[in-house]
Length: 175
Length: 175
Image (cartoon, rainbow over all chains, first blue to last red; front, side, top):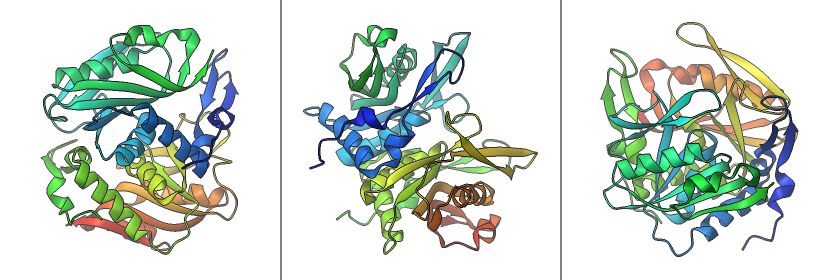
C-alpha cells in the first residue's frame, strides 16, 4: 500500500496565469513525484470502488495523464475525448460554453460498446462545462456514466451543479 | 502475465487523413480494448528493462496516454512535454520543423532532478523531429536520456536517423 501522502502539498499555485486574477493550480510537481503520482492514481481507483468499469474516458490533454493510468490500474479500456479535428474516424461532437464563445469536443462514434460502464476522469473541475459535454458524448454513443472523478475541484465555481445527474467526486478541493 | 496479443490487429488504418495520400494509423481501437492496451503498456515496460528510470517523459497529447501508464507501471514520475503556451511555470522551449514552418515544444525548467534518468515515450515515430526536440529539452534541463520507446514506427520516414545518438526502440513497425 502507498503511504499516506498529502497531495495538496504537491500542487503549485501560479498567480495570474493564464491571465490576471486567475490562480492556476499546477499539477506538474505532483506528476513528477513518483510517490505522489502513484498515490493520486490510487485515490482515483479508491473513489471508483464498487463500480464495474468497462472503460475510462478522459479529456484532452491533461485528463489523459490520470485517465490512462487509472484505466491500466483498473484493467479497463481507455477512451480519449478530444478537441475538434483530432480524431480520424467518424466522430460525434458536442459544444460547450467558454467565457467568450464556444469550443467543441469529439469522440469516435464506435468508441464504446452499447450499455457499457464508463468512468469519466479529468484533472480539474472548474465550471463543469467541459465534463458535462463529455458525458453527453458518452451517452450519445450508448455508454452509461458510472461515475466522474476529478483530482481537483474548485468549490467556488460550483461545477458540480452542472453534473448533478451523475455521481461526481473529487480528491482535492480548493475554495 | 498478459497473453500474447498481436497489437497490429488493433491499429485501424484511415486512408487520406489528415490529408490526401496519408495513411493514418489510428490507435484508438487498441486503447479501447483492455487486454490490448495492457499488453501495449507491458511491451513498453519490457523494452525499458534493465534501465533505472526516474521519470517517464511524454509528448502532448497522445504520448501522455502511454507515458503516464508506463510511469505508473514502472513506479516513475511523469513529465509532460507540451505544445507552446500550455505550461504555467518557467519553461524551456525547442523548435522543430514541420512540413511547412515550425512548431515549439516546452518543458518546465525544474521538471527533473539534475542527472536523473528519463525514459522518453511517444505513440508514433514519423520523421523524428518532435522526439529529437523533446530529447534536447530534457538535456537542456539536466536530465539524461535513458532510452526512447514508440508504440509505432513508420520505417519509410527514417525517423531513427534523427535519434541516432540515443537507444530508440519501437513496438510495432509499418513500412
